[in-house]
Length: 75
Image (cartoon, rainbow, N blue to C red):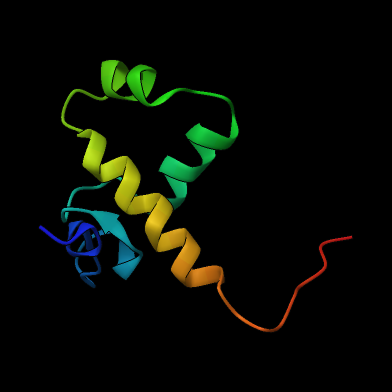
């Protein structure tokens, strides 16, 4: 299964934001957990419906979404 196929966008789910397998769990939520220091195992323990491949799919999606020539500064 292609990892990116786990990331879905449906206008009826979370207002069309990228989610994991049409669930009410967004890519941004996953990235925030990882950025906050949670490990993949901790995430899966806290959210048993999440699979390891879902985490990797979110990371892959983030890489694709931010792979541009233009760099944004947040300072």
